[in-house]
Length: 114
Image 1: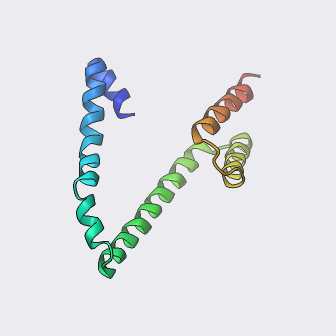
Image 2: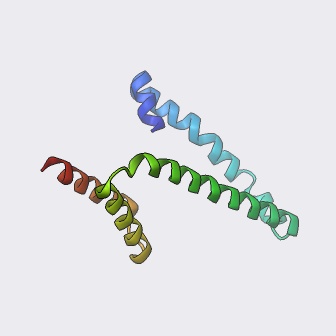
């Protein structure tokens, strides 16, 4: 999404610049402190902090999924498609999500075109 918006604003160089500007700081904030984190990860306080951050991230992702779901699931076909995707991801271990997304897109086109 970032690269697409960057492309719309400033072409291919804008796409590259936007992607670098968004993802490089996150990458660097993971890579550089990693050796130090390994040293302190055995401390109970650090583990508790990481557990809290992880729980908050799961809550934020669940909240985002709920908001997106309210907008995307608006009739029976979309509800069946969403439930089917959930069941497939739950039952079929290792199912690539991009494949599921493409398949759902094809089903969506077939449902609305005929």
